[in-house]
Amino acid sequence: ALRLARELHREFPAATFDFTAKVEHLRRHERHLGELARLGGLFVVSAVESLSDAVLQHLAKGHTRDDVAHVLKAVGAAGIAFRPTWVAFTPWTTLDDYVEMLDFVSDEGLIDHVDPVQYSIRLLVPPGSLLLHTAAMRPSLGELVPEGFHYRWQHPDPRMDALHAEVSTLVADAAERREDAAVTFGRIRAIVDRVAGAASRASEMALAGDRRRPPRLTEPWFC
Image (cartoon, rainbow, N blue to C red; front, top):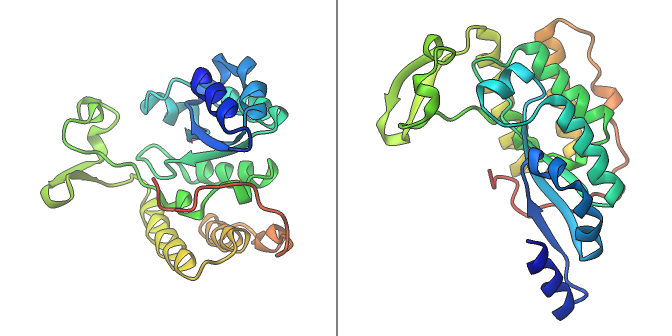
């Protein structure tokens, strides 16, 4: 990848690019991040998926929450925008986990780095998935949906399935109207606070409408 980036920069020095990398690879090769930025790297998409080490272990992601925090700082220090993706709903993701994800995005200044559709992504279990053979998946697993090429699953906490349905409707509507990501984030936060029985913090999410946004893909539904 570095050889390709170097050649691209040599031929087209004004060209910029994005790249996709696993969290574990970003940590292992963080010494190269500065060079990638100098060669024109603007942002990196990385499948963080969850901040729960238990969920990450079930998904066999190969990284931990501590790795995510480390990589976020390293990528930022190199001058590259970090765009995490999430699997926000899994059979093992608790309401507290979801709240922690939103807190992390807000506290780390990542609201504009996450396309709101990411807050609605639900674990897809297709035929042949290794998860089908795990004891952790078995209690939640439902029937195969042939036309959708996936298995249904149900969360042990009914609030999470209801939250998924509500957030999915919200982000689809927001994307259709090209709503400001910060506004959408605040609306999601209000829903989650209501479900959790906490005081709403939606007003804390206000960001200037004319703020400078980080670079991103043009298609928010890429996942």
